[in-house]
Amino acid sequence: MATTNAPTKVTQMNAPTKPAQIRVARQSPAYWRVTIDNPPINVMGPVMVQQFQEVIDALEADEQVRVVVFDSAVDDYFLNHSDFTAKLEDLTSLPSDPTGLPPWPDFLVRLTRLPVASIALIRGRATGNGSEITLACDMSFASREKAIISQWEVGVGMVAGGGPMARLPELIGRNRAVVRQN
Image 1: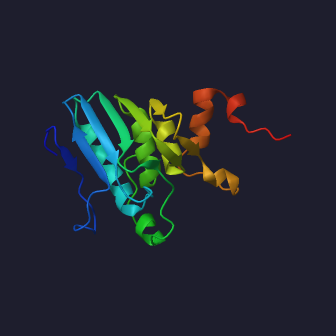
Image 2: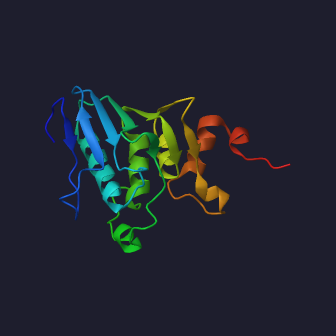
Image 3: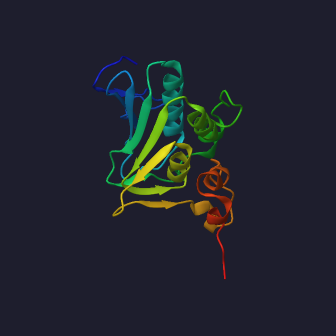
């Protein structure tokens, strides 16, 4: 990836004719903007997971970057849940990454350890994976009018795979993170 002010497209596996779902714009050597762009609702499939891996690899390799901002080009959606229409084997066949975790949790762990300020700008739905990346960032700014943050897995009795249940109590305290039912 060349250092320019123009957006840099992250390469895609197995889909060379489709536009990149993640765009990286190096605003300056120290400030990168990562834009999620998979209309109509920014669902995350195997191609996007691979592109997130390429982004974290590039961020870790660049010693000049100090701030990375994640945003969305799709109105009303920051990042949604996983693409349930994708073939499961396309996601499960992706190799484990440096942490030994599957690619998406690996990206989130590496993002939390990254020695740069990471910021999520949320102007719409951040559900499932969107909630997970929001919790992995150092800071999050959400639109009061449009932001909806949720972890849908909890509502159906599943354990979310990206670690939100471990990160949320650290951010707001255990008592505020526990859902109480009367």
